[in-house]
Length: 136
Image 1 (cartoon, rainbow, N blue to C red):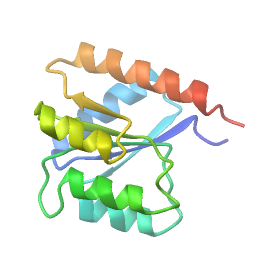
Image 2 (image 1 turned 45 degrees about the vertical axis):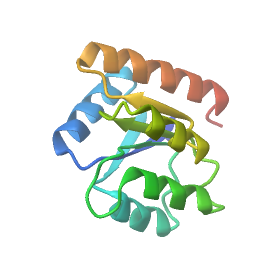
Image 3 (image 1 turned 180 degrees about the vertical axis):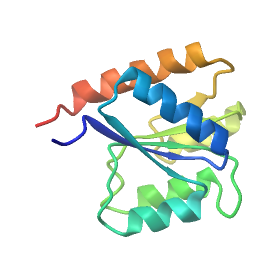
Image 4 (image 1 turned 45 degrees about the horizontal axis):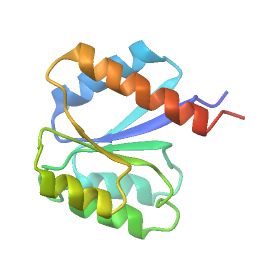
């Protein structure tokens, strides 16, 4: 059986990856998560063709390739441009938020400072995305 949603978190902070994964499993254990540590790693995984996630959560500040450049490249690829990308960062700069939305990001999420707020936020996103893309 196919998981209800497959999400891809691109974030260089391993602790953030673990917290994200734990929260997602708590919300709905049928949602699977995959991870990349930066934009280069993410594009390599997405280039294999065998992995097309339903949602992408993308940090802005990362080594080798930042989230803005990674977003540009994802949205430039026809087989990936339909995937909702949520920028997911501690950055709260209005210019960065505006730019990423202009580049095609679905939304810009400033990482909440506590687990309860992140859980509520992710739960809302997953509920909306499941309604938009029901499992067949």
